[in-house]
View 1 (cartoon, helix red, strand yellow):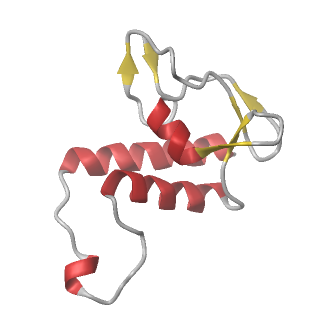
View 2 (tube, rainbow, N blue to C red):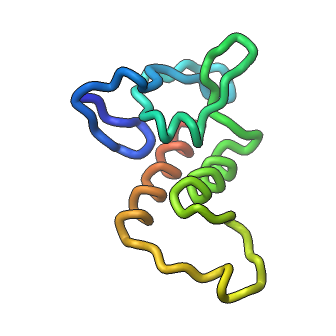
Length: 107
């Protein structure tokens, strides 16, 4: 059974999963990554290899995870209607787990 390195999602078969990616320093991480986390946290370089995205990987990962998980930008828009949302606890847990693991992977 495969478990995503970032969010912890498990799957019996993982044919579309990314099997390795590179940190900013060029270190290869051979851990399974689900398609959702790969789309949000990884980019492809000129050689087709997956690389953890962003200049500041932790900040970029938090921003991308929030936008993917909650479907709104992670910035103040100075409006109660736009800045305050009702979110399920499992959505928060999944987003925080993915952000934590992305930060851990960036080091």
